[in-house]
Image (tube, helix red, strand yellow):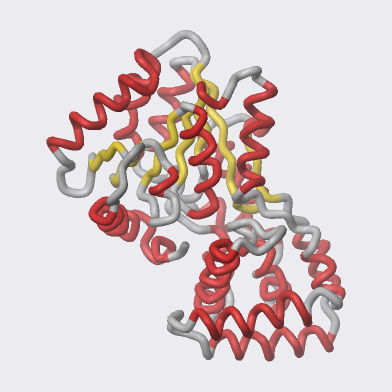
Amino acid sequence: MSQVNNFICFDLEGPLSPQDNAYELMRLFPNGDKVFEVISRYDDLLTLEGKEGYEPGDTLALIVPFLILHDISESHITTLAAKASYTGGAADLIKQLQSANWQTFCISTSYQQYATYLTGKLGIDTQNVACTIFPLDQLRITLCKEESELLQQTEREILKMVPVTDDRRIKQSLDDFFWEQLPSSETGKAIGEVRPVGGRRKVTALKRFADSHAQPLSRWVVVGDSITDSRMLQVVDQAGGLAIAFNANEYALPCATMSLASTFISDLTEILEAWYKGQRKAVEELVKEKEKSGGSGNRGYFHWLSGRDDISEIVEVHQRIRRLVREEAGKLG
């Protein structure tokens, strides 16, 4: 690859690590996984509705009251980070890119304690990481007895919404809790300070990185997989850069330039070499060639998405591999 700097930015959870840190945190207390699944769906509904001031990934702010209720601390986050694994080939890919003089970045909705630990082990400089600042231990002191009772009651109501099928009920009940009851409480005021890096905030972080290196978005490669990445993928694709959807869901795929469904992210190596040699045109030719031959087993399913209307079959392929790689987290939006 090139001795001239190239620029690539990864989402963390999905592309580089299969775990969903927030989901794993919620699983530390009884029925926390079920509570998270309902709130994750609520996050999707708010995003699709276009609620003013709301960004996809703000789930990480919405779950804070329940983390506080069950006495989850920052030490729990770092413990989970130490146990987290990496997506197949992730460490090798990052090492290879950096040895070829690529500038590697990560923009993640993940909490800072988790994101900096995992990216640090991969060798990505802290200054090249944007993530969610999360002073959980400070926030925990805000909970009083009255608010604890409200949270317990709300949790019981949320558990009645499992399995997650009734969007209308989820929307009505959680709208009342999050936007009517909670804001006036001390806990509500505290979590208002948590600003997850998702949606437009990912775009803002990417532009900050691009400006600091005086590189237009047309020179960037970005890799994402979910609704929190959709705007970042779309902005880079529209700028003429390369937006890659990796084991992605139906929200990310329509926003990307191309996609890869595989158990190994290192399958992107040849694609990134083509990007250096001939930018988007060279990548398009290679991806379309690979698309004709198809993938094999659970690896190497490439698709060129730019200008494509029907992606239903592609979504199915990604759903299968996504669930295989990300296990329970794969079903989240």
